[in-house]
Length: 249
Image (cartoon, rainbow, N blue to C red; front, side):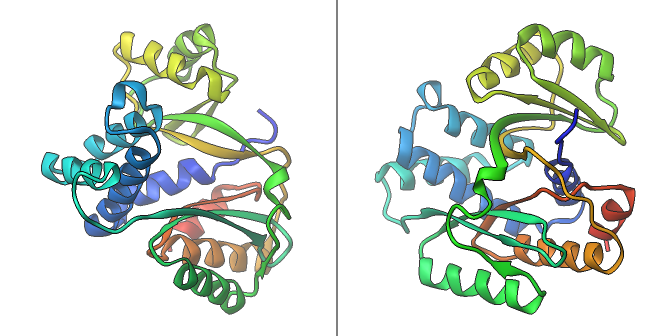
């Protein structure tokens, strides 16, 4: 379980608890539109769209919103066209940050990301400066004690999961991208209902921060995550219970 980063689990829990409904829907609409633009409007042959639709349904997004987002992505309806970008940088204390952006205005997005790094004492890096520290994985998260770790291990490992990590009342199952759909399907067939399933980035090595550096880093991560154009934020900070508490402040 070395190298595991709790940011995705913690941020999911934070988002489910207190994110504004409108902002959550905005992010989901962007993701659905982008997925449909890239791979077409049929989720059967579009894994990214399938995953986005699963998340949207879990958030109780109205079907009309989902349908319109798909049609905008495929060009059946007029609307803005989103571009997917990645930004990289460092927190105070030197932890790596990887940021996914979906935006219709890349100049605005770049300006806001740059300003946020500067305001919170971070450093925006060049493309490729930290991406090499992260591996793209599938992540399936069970919340609220819906399954036990033993149950997740039994089904997940049999289907090809790489790692299973328990954090509080959440269990995160990590997979290689090539096994993501198979592991999801195994949980579906077993009747094990997960809270979210997504493609994520997992750091190969974590960095422990303490005191002022940790506090400043958490403020930067939260400020970046609050930007309208930002979809997801990852870091290689070795998160602890202390940092989880800071996220909720």
